[in-house]
Length: 114
Image (cartoon, rainbow, N blue to C red; front, side):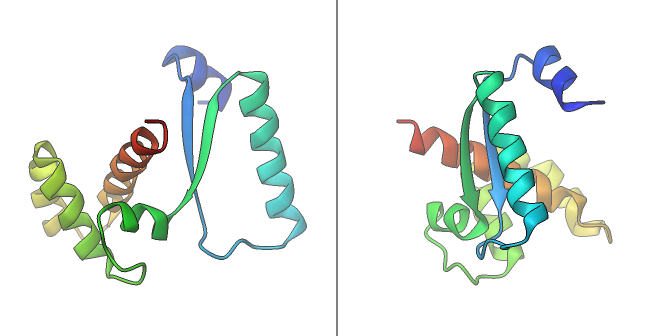
């Protein structure tokens, strides 16, 4: 599914983009961020860029804390995620870590926009 369709179908009006703590200085990365900025501007989307360290800081965690600790703090703040967290504990594939990061990003967005 292409990004334009997702924006339209889900009536997206805001986006949080997780970026590396140390921004790459490559031409490809700069072009990607530029293309995202153009997309957000054209679609009139509010966009915020956040690093994983900033998301961890929201939960009062050290930027270098382990991902597992970060996830447990997100789940403590959002107990409705407990079933997914318990399922994640049994998985070899850490797909759900990204889910918890996305929830933290939404929480971050709500704080920044207060």
